[in-house]
Length: 388
Length: 150
Ligand SMILES: [Zn+2]
Image 1 (spheres, rainbow over the protein chains, first blue to last red):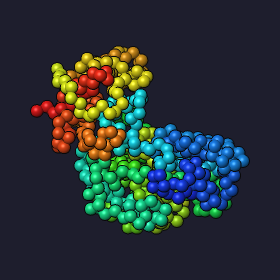
Image 2: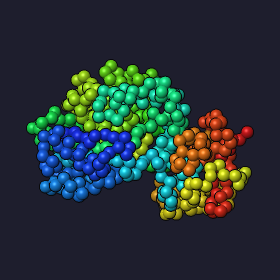
Image 3: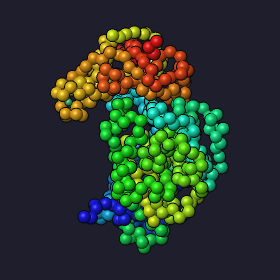
Image 4: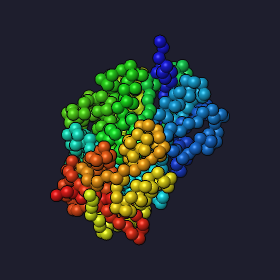
């Protein structure tokens, strides 16, 4: 029986981004950043901007689709869609775009995210406003207010259960900084990080040092998604969508301290579904972009995607293994959220596609299968696999 | 039974007042704390215990909610030491400790709080703790805090 799947039906055919800035560094508005990224992605794909007829985003993107379509003068807007959740929604937004083109709702969907933390909401400032909604009353009065602090609580438990030490977290951070040194787009380009500097950096919240936490930035990233058929006639080598998944594990309620599988990054069933759809195993993956708002979440995420057993993390999660060009599994090869730019992970899709096209600044030789994971200790989360 | 009370605040009153969620799903929990009791949600239909409170039982889908008192004895399940102040008003309070406590007499349900005492103390997962009620009389609520059982 033919499997009902998105596999092979859609592709990323263009990638684009604004210039990336430190928080507050953008001379233009968040809306203008979004438009710049979409225009760059269309140019890269070799299509006219006005051929875009669909828009997809995630994490409560504030530049709403009719404004973007109006601003860009799109001839028609045939699809617009927002994936629920924050950084867990990146791959889901791409998956929604892929579904839209495969079903014929739209022809060219731009998946985008813009963020000007100097001008709008700062995620790292937590949620302490008046009238604490939902579950916040169980944590905020004790000073547990930010994503860093809440994720640290889960990572600390994981470290205890699997004898993971600071070395694994440091390796994730140092890998991102290593790769950023090759990427002129990266905000941390020209600012290498040593283990000594990592160790000496201040604690944000134990077990996270400053360098375990992502930057705050201004920037925008976008990709163009279309059908596999159209992709073959376009300018770039297509990055075909091999599989995509979105969801949450059992009762993994956002912000709950009573998640049954507390010390989890929320990928146990998601990873299985992803591999099943792709028809591949972890050993087949050539390169990974894994949402790194906090290094510790990436450590758990790698184990939950089967790259090693949780109890083998200390042998697997080393700088040597995670870095291009010689590592077993190059991770966040453009610098990630930690060192390229924090566009809530959208920029990781651009890099995952570049690895398939062959134009990454840390190009993994003959990369055929490229994974992108969004979220990590957030929920719902999502992930996807691209192939040549 | 519990337990100690304190009029000393672990953190200054610079955060928004604590209390029930706007939709009232956890009202009984906060009312109990004001009376220096700890309750967890207990389904009147199937007896399932759950936290944080929700308007439905995830096991049997009954909307008929009750509450069960628990002892206030627990174990540290995880912890964080916070150094970077958010909001800035907590600047002079850092570092401070937040522990997640599991309650053996409530099927291991977890409740967070501050760990009283030296903020630089070594924290051990699994260590036994007991509840301390921190009254914020002027603001009209009581916080559940934790201290090590010696
Ligand atoms: Zn029930």
